[in-house]
Length: 160
Image (cartoon, rainbow, N blue to C red; front, side):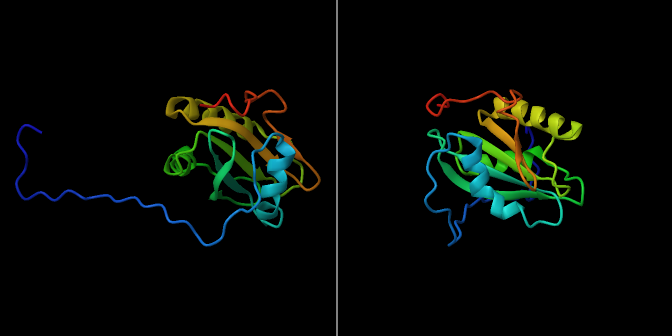
């Protein structure tokens, strides 16, 4: 930076959040994983491959936005941690809820699911965006990492 190069072009980046006409209605603060699953299950239950959705939450644990952050194959989904937190940062979220489906119908987490959850927690701590839960949705049930003690339980007013 001591000697700027004359005539060298530098790209200008402009980020803009655009809200779609569609929105999530009647969604208040989540207090139980079942409530979050009921809200997101329709997005994932008919998928023929694994998908990961991230929901941004306010300080009051109220939903701000939801995005399908990754689409994988029949039995796996490659996750880019940056994409998950990009969504959260653009929404000024205090917390995120991550959801993904298992096309096998069995919601039990794989070793990769557990490792990814740990990475999400660590990245969230660095960025100041708390991972409230990671929920795997199966055919007849779900697995909540928070309920199983693998993600710290948050109180709605303790996020700030």
